[in-house]
Length: 174
Image (tube, rainbow, N blue to C red; front, side, top):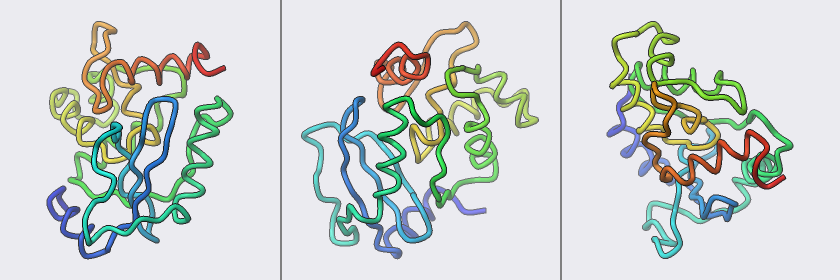
């Protein structure tokens, strides 16, 4: 299985295309190639607008991703159908492939997620894999919460995690 480090070298060799897109939770960076989406991450205003020579700006490659994201933010889409090119360890892939199974508008604890992948003692490792999720929102790591029901850890910040969960509960952007 490939590692995160090999993902970076593959990304450079693949000459990934990228696009920045606005959203109700801030500016997002999309990156991918003809195999699918490699990355969806938060890109705060003022962060880099160009990613270097090995990256090529392209809005056309991401039209369907942007269409689906817009539908999600309008609460018209509950699950995504986006081709993705995920590279990670076997454990990370198990976590990432389980996250979309958490129903829209609901949450699951890290412990429950560990049990779902058959690794009940791997709660901290599940947290690490969740943190390494390369495709935020579409792979809904924001639906994973602490065992006591509190919001913990999110690459886009806890306020963004709270907003995404509120959106899915029908409390925002309606």
